[in-house]
Image 1 (spheres, rainbow, N blue to C red):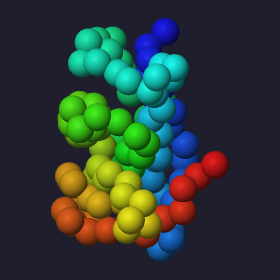
Image 2 (image 1 turned 45 degrees about the horizontal axis):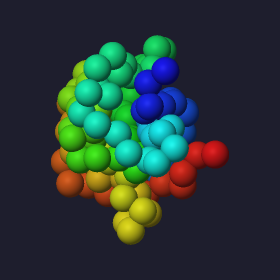
Image 3 (image 1 turned 90 degrees about the vertical axis):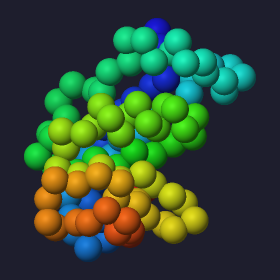
Image 4 (image 1 turned 60 degrees about the vertical axis):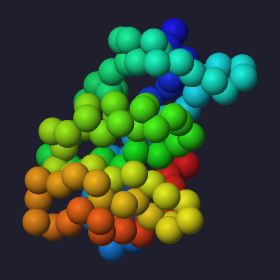
Length: 109
């Protein structure tokens, strides 16, 4: 079992923009992961790349870099920032959102 758990949750922004929420969770007892943990880590099946994806959860910067790269085919990719109560768009293929835009959202359960 990979020590990094990924889960896709359908959600929408406060403005009603549908997206997929990619929640990451570190499952090790001490909460520590190593770069080798990226081996075999895959985005969950059934992701609809026609929608945007917001990545959320505690993780190393290199883990976020990997996930942003893997989510590149999506309409857009954002990273959740709790201080902003939203996701910062870091990549986009659509005109509906722009890089640097903060999409206000509530975290899904």
